[in-house]
Length: 203
Length: 322
Image 1 (cartoon, chains in turn blue, red):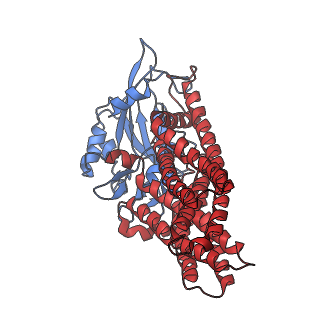
Image 2 (spheres, helix red, strand yellow):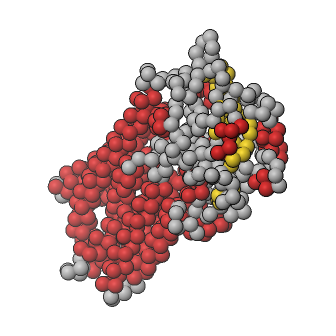
Image 3 (cartoon, each protein chain N blue to C red):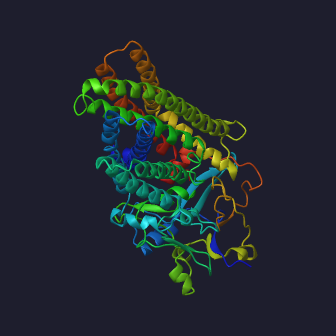
């Protein structure tokens, strides 16, 4: 059994409060323009049963991380024991190539520091047996963290796809999702609000 | 404006253009070097020798612009560490080696070292390293993370840039040197011959550039058409469908920047093609070389503007898709 750890985001439970975003940003004292975790909001389904859905995403700690493969300075490592992908800012030269190679827009460049940064899965906390800060702060239990193979035993639904989530065959992300109970399900075509509207909302 | 320049990755635009121009220019000079192998000609050698003087500054400028892209340029040397798996690292290795070799090649010309065979051997190695450097530069953008870049047309576009800008830069230097450092009468036949060869090269380069552009545009347009399909319009994209939507975003960006698209088509492709035809027609009538030289200088400036527009569009079209 793989010991790859990852996040599980339940779109039924998430209310879009962004506590996870804020807790992460506060814990790591991030500048306002950097967010390791972001909550995206969109509408799916059809009137009158259309749903407002929120999706909390950070680094997917991929099985085959494109950020790590492309990095020219070996600033990325993937931990053997839990598969978390860690970025070392002291090694980073700020070439931003990882911001190109990651399909999920996870690494973010901080012009002030001159380096890229990204979610490291709170590996120091995880090593001490604690949960990542975002998971700990989640009010509704929508966000959980643990071994990917064990999600199925604990969660209502475990799927790899979410609306608009880039092709998982590229890097094999470890993040898993549960869709809203009453909304469209992954095996059906899903109506979604136009990207422009979602983009504005996301801002 | 600054935000737009950053989004268009202006430092990478200039890095790729200058280095591709340098590799193209080097190949022109290397071919010149080999051309006179059996019948040495002092005037011809003088042109080639002065031509090599642009190689180091061009490549140095390109490498300088590549470091302005970095958040911590003082640690740029670290980019050499991951050659085993990173194309970016390989690109930096290849261009660093190319830079060292062109410096050596230029030095050998400058000192008029008698062993011209040694110089030519250095030249062949340098030329091959230059091609490898451009190939690795293209591979840097063959990444599934940015589907709008991940297309083989980049090989044609990046190669054609070198094929057009390199010879144009060398021809501009020849024009400048002729009459100033090289006797007008002695140099005239060589300048005329070089213009005819420039015309052929420009025509081939403009053709390749046009093919590469059409190929890339059809690739982006296919993504745009797929995204606009009424069966999936307004539906959430999943799996491979998300890749199509990323390409569609790239297509939309190209459409939104119609001025730059036109600049690329008119100046980047149209001007070198017209210049090729113009040089052919002017030399058939033994027209004034000063006129030809002025056209080459103007052609170089306009083509560079067109190439800048093409490259900026390339970077803009690869906008993050999630």
